[in-house]
Image 1 (cartoon, helix red, strand yellow):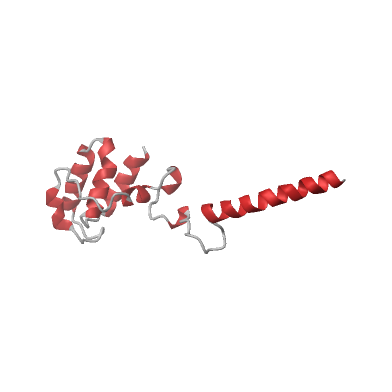
Image 2 (spheres, one colour):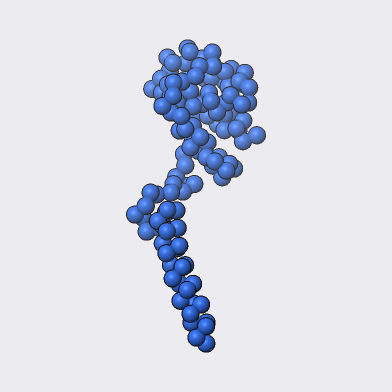
Length: 133
């Protein structure tokens, strides 16, 4: 009986500091630590199909200069909302999207964001479809 009480005290004496250390370094649920963004706050429609949210991937390296994919003329559309494009302008984006090699698609989207260019709504949907393939 005394041995079990001593064993329990040893487990508590070792376990409690380890639990506190883990809670401090991993984050707690009390809201005092850095918040973890839930998947539902993501702005992408496809978040549930990826291990890493494409929006998070796009935010990485935002301080680096934009890479151009022979699309310098798209800089004229900076600041324009996604719904404000005409059919010919949408086709310009579509031509670039479908001529990119698949591994360059996320980089192209990141480049557009860095340059303040919003994809037209139909192209954004096609982009998400291609990324999900």
